[in-house]
Amino acid sequence: MQRIHFLLSAIALWAALPALSQTQSVSQGPHRMEITVERRIGSVWRAVDPGFIFAKGDHVRFRYKTNFSGYLYVMNQGTGGTYTKLFPREDTGMANKIEAGKEYMVPATDGMFRVEGPPGYDIIYWVVTPIDIGMQSAYKPLPPPPTDLPKMRASLTPRCDDTILRARGECVDTDAGPQAVEDKSKLPENIQPSAGDNSQDLVFMKKQHRSVVSSPVPLAGPVVFEFRLAHK
Image 1 (cartoon, rainbow, N blue to C red):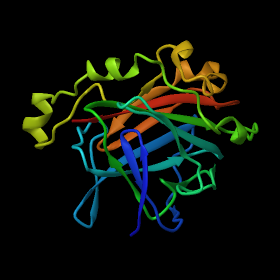
Image 2: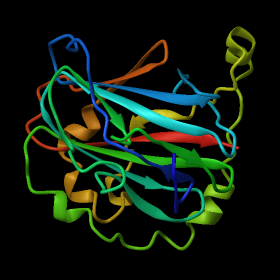
Image 3: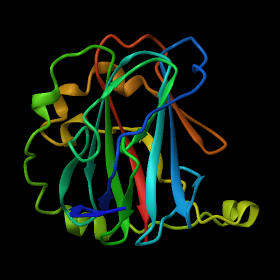
C-alpha cells in the first residue's frame, strides 16, 4: 500500500482503490444512522468502543449505514489546529451518495486514517442530508481554525474510565464518540448552514461497539453531529 504524504491534522491518510459493501438494511422507522469505528491490529480490523482512546500511529476507519438515502460529508478539526475535509475527496472517494441499507466505508477506499497530532480530541463533523442540496461546492478550501484552537485542545486530555477498563480491558473515555453539536454558532463557517433544526433533536445511543444516531422524525434537510476521536 502506498502512503500518501499528507496530514489530515490528527489523521494521516492511506489510500488505494474504492471499496463498498452491502449489508442487510437497518430496521425501518425514524431516520437512523449507524457508525462503527475500527482499529487495525496487525492485518486485522477490529471494531472498538466509540470512546476508545487511540495511540499515536494507530490506523482507523469508519463504517457507516443508514435506513434512508441521501448524501454524506465528513470534516475533521484536529488537535494540531488544522481543519480538513476528509470525505468526499479524490483520495478518499468521491461517491458520497448513500443508499438505505448499504454499508459504506470512510474513507471509501481500501485504505485507512493514521492517528497523529497532540493528545486530545479530534472533532470529526458528519454532515448528512437526505436530499441533494448542492453542497459539494461548499466543501472546498476551508477557512483557518480559531487562533486559540491548539491551546484549547491541549487543555483537554482523554482519560480512561476505570469501570470500563476493568470490565473490558479497554481504555475508554466516556466524553468521546458521537454527540450533538452544543452550539451551532461555534461550528466551522462552511458547516453552519447545514446544521438544520433537527440537528439538536438527534438521539445518540450505543449498542456494543456500534453508535446509533437517530431522528424522532424523518429528516427533511441536512443535519450535523460530531464524533470526538480521543487519542493520546
